[in-house]
Amino acid sequence: LYFAQVSGSYALGMSVFSTTMLAQSLFEVPTGIISDRSGRKRTIIYGAIAGICSLLGYAAGGTYLSLVIGAIFEGLARAFFSGNNDAFLYDTLAENGREQDYQEYLGKVSSSYQLALGISAMLGSLLATISFSLVMWVSVIPSILTLVISLGFVEPRTLMHQSPNIYTHLHIAVQKIIQNPRLRIISLASILSFAIGESAWLFRSAFIATLWPTWALGIPQMLANIEAAIGFYFAGRIIRRFGELRLLIGGMSSGEIINLFGLLVPTVASPIFMSLNSVFYGINTTAINNLIQREFTDEQRATMGSLNSLVGSVAFAVFSLLLGTLADRVGVIPALVSASLLAIVPMSLYAWGLRGQGGAKSQINDAVIESA
Image (cartoon, rainbow, N blue to C red; front, side):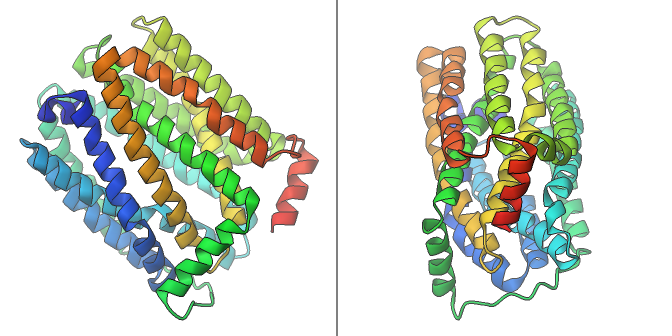
């Protein structure tokens, strides 16, 4: 809403998100290589600094150019964090011989993140009644704290063979992805799911704004984050019980049905009802990340993650701009309905990539052992 207010249209407002993702795509591979060759901790520090610069650009506001500058720095921050942070967690666990617990720890870390998002959403909506710009300025404070905390991280002492140069390192990472058909399919599904789902999620505030006053816009966001936190927290146990395929197809289907009902029957209760699907988001995100990390190699882990994020960023940039343009032409609800219907594409790809893993507990355990 802030971006649309400054730029003057939904299309230009969504183009700020597109700029972020395009910038991220440009920086993805270099930052992934920096992570693999220079260390996870140092990369997190670089990302924290870029995040501060991003919010300062947004907070300056007033012109579309300042938003674009903020978006470019946000893209840089995202690129530093994207493949690196998951690799940091995985390497830390691997150093202690506990990589099999990755999904459990990822879920709990992500749960804390979602709780923080819920609190910030509520505070943000209250501050927005005073000024959208004030929200951006206040957001600079936790970004500075992020930088301070990152200085205290401990670099995992994983012994990895380093490629002789960055070009060889990148070439090997690309080859590993191309030569792994299961990784290719799962990666494509996660890329499309991110592009469609994230664009629709960011644009949902435009729909909620037609039903609720500005001061209340953070309530559905807060509820969604709390439910996502619950999903993340219990994701490890749930995945071990039911398996990735059953959870991905069932969770995504249920989530989109909830979205469609809330959009096609719009009432003041729709934002609350639509927030219910966030519990599936927490579980599914953990399942997808766990599947992909098992397929990555240790030497190129962050770079391979960055390559996936690169393509995902480009896909998001294109889809978010199309979604904003569609909303300007036909309305907010038809645009969001179209996004929900498109979710069948990544669902089909997950079913294809995980075929043969019906979700039974024994099958999933076998798959874990084989991929390890």
